[in-house]
Amino acid sequence: MPDLDLTALADAGAFVSQEHQEHLAGTFGMRTLSVDPAAGRVAFTDAAGARTVWRAHLLGTASPEDGTWLWAHENVNGFPDAFVQQSRRVRAFGRKHGVEQLAVPRLELDDELPGRLVRAVKALTGLTAHVTAPIGTGSTKAWLLVEDDALRLPPPTVARTVGVVMSGIAGTGVADHRRALTAWAEQRGAVVEPGEGVARVHVSDGTVRVRFDDADRIVGISTGRGSDERAVPGADPAPVPPTDTERPGSEPEAPAESPAEEAAPRRGWLARLLGR
Picture 1: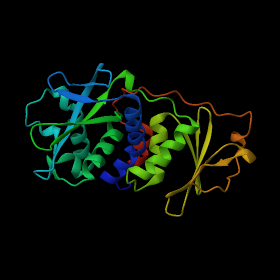
Picture 2: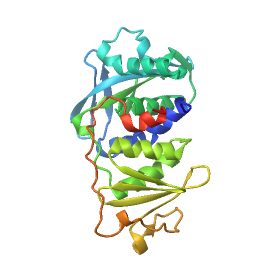
Picture 3: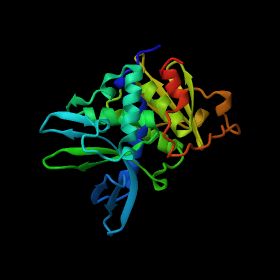
Picture 4: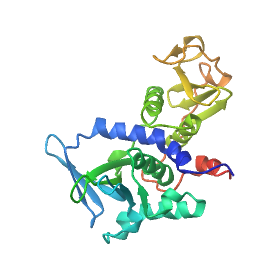
């Protein structure tokens, strides 16, 4: 069984987390945000004053004053079970697979820790959008997963895939780019065709070719078909010859989009990650 740790899990949730947070920021103009633990909901108003309510799951709180992250599965405030159930699922996974950071009550806080934990949780739960909200006094923040039909991501396209990869490797501190890409594709219903030094990601409107160096870091990304292939700005422009399945007239059929509310771990990539 390969090593399974917080870094591996955070990588597996990195790209889909980045995509969903950018989708939230671009789609919903959240101004004021409030949390109702009893109802397990978050509510926000937008610039026009319209109010929106989503289901919420408390993961934990980050307190710079105390220098600690406190998992919601400790439930020191006696919140309803439904409000902390996702955190408890994460604790059970951590105990079973020896991922200590997911199983202990508290962790020493640093600037990167909450994001790493939340990306790992997203990989495990299938809930891939989150918000933060002030709680109590001082600068303590609650980190919450949110879910609603309105939060479903659009189907992955060539343009969207390029954006996800480019922003994902720039903004989330990913350790294993191949793992992050493969997990994103499986979570989003895309198909990855692996190869030495390159992976082809088949989506509804075409194929994206992603190149890797010898350390499996992404170094280039391109789109198009055959001689029409064009380089994405900032990436390696050298083309990769298309396979027969990529030639005109043989467009791959995109798999169906998985429901956004599915909370179970994704069997495919997680099974491989666990060596099963």
